[in-house]
Length: 191
Image: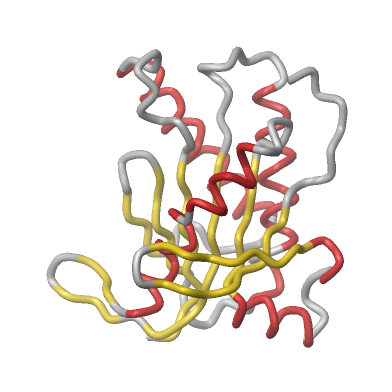
């Protein structure tokens, strides 16, 4: 099945200062914000394949979903929701997210989903360069990394504002690729 894949991760989830209660709260907020951002962006949350990853999630959209709402709209809406809930949060309770987006052909088996696009998605999500870029943007509640293929398709079809994305080289495990980083506009949030 050809689909859009979204990987989400909570940075510093395993920080020793974050006990089980803090982790539970962050996970609850992550899922609430993702679901609300999907709804606002007119993306089918209930019809999507959602796999929990402990400190994040894998989301596969139904194959018939167009890319129009996946990148810019989803990122902007999710950022607004995160900013609203984080404005009074301390460092441990502040929910920040890394999100990678890719598309491709995946298969289902008895244990979940598999395929090269899924591997590529998680190489993007876990890439040290991506983690470093979010670390260098302490006011950003969300960072989104889009695969080169998906970025080129979206840019040439007018689905995104290409000027809002910056190229980033990905070197993680066996993956050598380019991706495109989106960070939210900066505002004075007090963080």
